Length: 461
Image 1 (cartoon, rainbow, N blue to C red):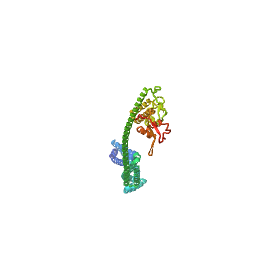
Image 2: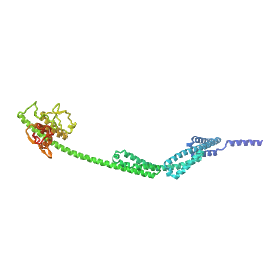
Image 3: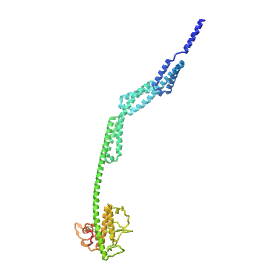
Image 4: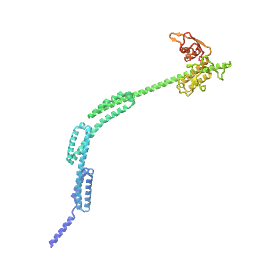
């Protein structure tokens, strides 16, 4: 009986001990290590769901331990470990494949940047490692592929960075030269003054490109710099020539201004001279007219007129008048009057000699004064000369001296020369002589030795 009771007690104690088993420390440590190993291969990026589940089970295991539910804690710890191991495998596989793609891209970039020439030994090693990586990926040896791919990635990154640095210098040198050439070619100054010099840069620029393709980067840079120097020299030459042209233009303009000032000064002096003569003639005509009025000169419609035998004189000797009133424009005006830019818009027609009046002479003299006041000295000269010419017409009936036409072997007479001799170098007054001698002169271009011409007096004298 006693033995039986002892056995029952032992069974009860064993049951109590089983129900109070210890925390699954070993399992929790193994789960934690598996999680850390998965994190080391960036399972969060490459196996996010699996590592997330493993971490959640690990967290639940610890909560069960706190609640003294050790059996449940142990199960969760084991589950966490298994999921972490699976996450590690997935992450390693994905990461190995990722490095394979990155290394493949870097291999292409290395070749594009002349790594087989610039970093021959390193590139040969990288190429062998990449072939090995392809084999490992194909065999699904992802852990080895991951380790090899990661090391290859670091090597290729260094190779590509170094080669790109060298090729970029050559590219930049060539591009800079080309850009400068394009800018210069679009410059009107360069095209005008130094286009041939600019084109000299094309040969070294093309050579720089060929050297670049042959991976001779240092030589390529040197040729690009040579082209750039030629371009700059062409630009400098063009700029110097342009500035020299500007300076010459400025000097020419200043010379023109000086010459124009001198011309204006001469025109002004000549205008003053002719206006003075015209005023003297006008005053003399008024004086003569006053004397004639006193002696009973003819008065018609309130306007003094001299009827000439010769009729209408055409220019050089033509007279014009306004159709509607008595305003006149000198036919020999060379500036604003002749080219149509005058303020006057008068319509002109020929006027018979018999209608020439002192008022008309005075009108032209007033036009000369107005033109002079505006600084239009050539017009003032023309108006004053016309006033003088009209005044001469009013005087041409008076008796005057004569001139006998001669034939000099070296100096043939003509009306122009005769007028210059008889009227103080005023050759333009030749129509006065012609009109006074129409009985002998049928064609003013044809006069003959021995002819004796009447020379009407000139008020200019």
